Image (cartoon, rainbow, N blue to C red; front, side):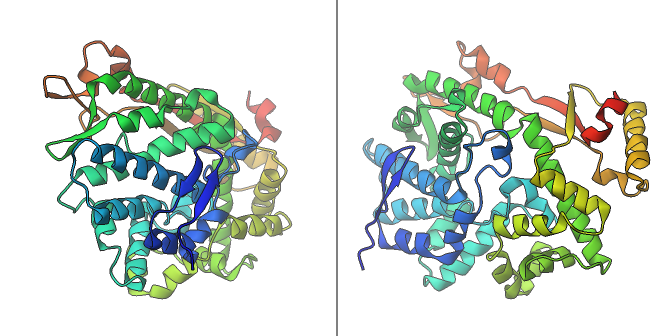
Length: 412
């Protein structure tokens, strides 16, 4: 069988699968599931073109990793074929642990288990199936490989994951401000003292990258209407779980019903292999099919939330740079309780509050380091002629409250 396949990608053109191992990973059912999980969850409610999947993103990130490795190799950095393949396998699988609706339901399926932990567990299962050939990829993914710059390519403030999702999400949403010059950034990468650095001549490309990232976060990832939709689907799942655990009949696919019934942690995964088998069968279709059924459910909260999401009757959302006054929040809750005839214990399903925050660059952590012409390594935020990056490193927080539009006029 010919395993040297080529994908035609709308963002980069032709993407080559350079090894049989990578092809086998892509063909595996665990990876093919990513075709059925949208990259941006419910963002399509605001940007109708945002229909691309985690499958698209993983292939794009693999493509950029290949470019990065070739660029580093051309600068006399010794990289073996095994390291190259392992790096591409690591980035190919970095999101394989995402569940339905990606980040929106990340903590609704399991009890505080981030998708990175699930990804690693799936990689361990695949490593067993592939006879140990993914061990180096796992070492790179977990930052336990001695050559640390490989992990930085997979996960850092300037990794190929971010480079792809900014370009790809910009392309599919039509938000042109998010487009970045990934090719130039990758060509500016180098390795110094086993750390990933950017050559000094690429410093303005970094600034452009960080500005684009900030714009994409506020215009796309944390768009207020997207936040409202994500809070609604989260509350739908929480209500369905509560009813299921109270022995109320809540129809769903067998695997989704299992996760609604159980409160699971990572320890449960490790103890019972059948749990992971159920998880890798879950995707967006399970949740949407269930929501369509729940729109007719006798529970008025579950049916109201589900039908509202299906018909895009999204909740009103208000943003504030400071916390909302308790008097205002209590007033909104009382209006909701009175209008929908629900109890104080139930009102949190229809009145949600929280906080969103973003800083495009975290100075002082895993820095983006610049290699100067004098062979000095400095944090990009400390470059004297880049005050914008210092500004971008400041965290911006916004508080929000969401509630049904049925009571919006009353609340105001």
